[in-house]
View 1 (cartoon, rainbow, N blue to C red):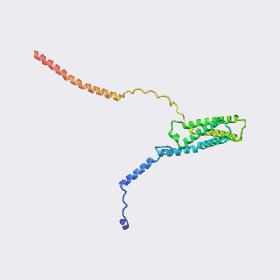
View 2: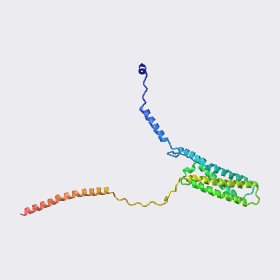
View 3: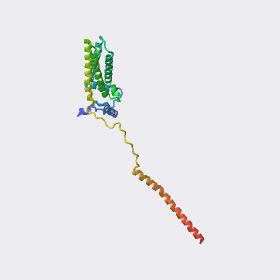
View 4: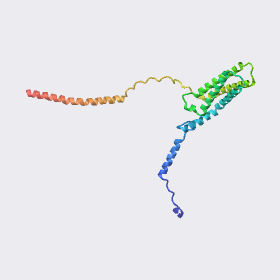
Length: 242
């Protein structure tokens, strides 16, 4: 008992400290953001989240690997074509496709597509893959038909072009995942129906009628005394004549 009395009591927490703890807890709750969505992130925090999410989607779905393989095959075909005479149309097609593949890799790597929402990026990438596949297959066929003698370097370059076209077609199949579970919105471009003129509410009508009635009542009461005064004056006039 004596020991308990001798022990000093713990100091109570100050009210200011409690308020500070409450504020920190509220701030933590507000700063918590969903992992699958942007939430209320802004500025640098938003770009970090967009950067990670874009790269995660780009690499996990296989778009990056397919595009890099196609890009490597096209660069290899250009290297193989250096030792032989090549039609300028082939070099034009290969350099064009290389630049387009590099463009999309940069777009998806730095999450630029997240800040340009007015372009439908999955559809544009899908069309690019279709066109690149068509151009590369046509270029490979043209490369074989335009030469009578085909050296081994030339053959390997044509094979690289065919492999790049094949992986572009694989990327088309991967792009279908973006469109699964999404419904097309109908009647988006249909203009809205014209708005009808607003009718006055019955409560407003009754209030206006009541005001009119109240304004008309004092006029009647004033008219009655005037009529009484006129009758009294007539009576006086008659009395005076008598």
